[in-house]
Every structure is written in structure tokens, then in C-alpha cells.
Image (cartoon, rainbow, N blue to C red; front, side):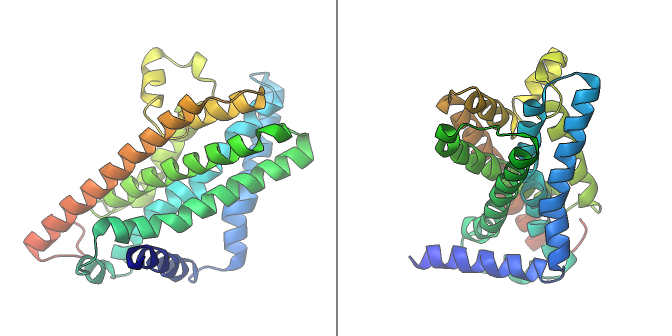
Length: 259
């Protein structure tokens, strides 16, 4: 129970410390308004080009709504420790690194889930009901797993941000790959086989496909399981990178350096 308490409290305090530097208007604009306007843009673009129907782009951009809190937020949760010169005290803590960084990930998972639910609600009100009522429990499970895997990707990018100068650039590259390769806004069937294979190992790909099956009145637990497995792999990769960079920092006695 002490470990659970530490994970929850440290995660909340870290989240508050980061977002207390911003205004509520910025929170609403980046995590609520931006995903909705992005969804409307792609829906209208889809109507003009005839690539797919409204539901295709609504579902895709609901899943992409997790990137603001999950990918970008997960990146900031780690990389900003160096930017604000708090990385040294964090790494000097005797606590388990899994507890420290896992606690930082939890608020972003919850926020990403909220952002997706809000985007889906607005999309359903403006463009028509997308998900059948009977599919809500399966949908929430799928969105929770998607938020977890996207946040794990953000933690990987944040880990890289401990070494590279411009971690925002790396996060934007990851976000672009999510748009192009996961089937959210570009049908995967029209991609070259190589890119389809790459997309299969990126978060949100299987969650997007699982959500589309829910829209059709079905549910694939296997797709959700694959999404969860990918999230676990990215989470393990983030912890491994953090441990490596921590060991390197201790070796060179430089916790807040660029390299």
C-alpha cells in the first residue's frame, strides 16, 4: 500500500507541477478543442476526397486524441525534468524507477482517456451517433489500453529527450507516424506492405482496428491484447533507456547535461 500511495501521490504532484505553469485555457485548447477541430477537419477532407466515410475519420481522430496527453505529455513528463533542473534529485531518489516513472505516466493515461471520450462525445453530437450503446464497455476498455500504449510511446520519446536537444521534434515525428501508419486517417490497405508492417508495431494501430470492429457491432479481444502487448514493450523500452541514461549520468557525474 505504501508503494501504491507513493506512485499515486508522486504522479499527481509531478503532473500538477508541470501544468501549474500553464493556464486552464491552454489545457482546454490543447487537450479538448484541438482534437475536436482536427476531427472535423479530417471528416470534411474525407467528404471532399471520398477516401472514407465520416465514421472512419471520427474513430481515427478519437484515437489520435490520445497523442496530446499520451505522447506529448509522456514526453514532457520525463524530458522536462532535465529542462527544469529537477532530474538530479529524481535520479538520486532511492525509490524504484518503475514506481517513479510509472507514477508520472498515470495522470497522462487518465487525461488521454478523458480527451478521447470528450472528442467522441462531441463528434457523436455533431455528426451522428457512432458507437452502439451495447459497445460502450468494450470501447472504454479499448480506449484505456490505447491511452496506456500511447503514453508508453511518449515515455520512450521522453527518455530519448534526456539526450537529444530538441525532444519536441522527436515527439512530432512520432505523432506524424501515428497519423500516417496506424490507420487512423490513412487506410492501411493503401500503404506499401513495408509500411503496413511497420505500422503493426506502433501504438494505436490495433486499438484503432479494434474500435472499428466495435462500430460494426463486434469486438475483438485479440486486437486489444495485441495493443496492450505493444504498450508493455514500449513501457519496458522506456524503463530500459532511463536506466541506461541514469547509469551514464552517474558515471560522468552529470545528471542535467545534454549528453
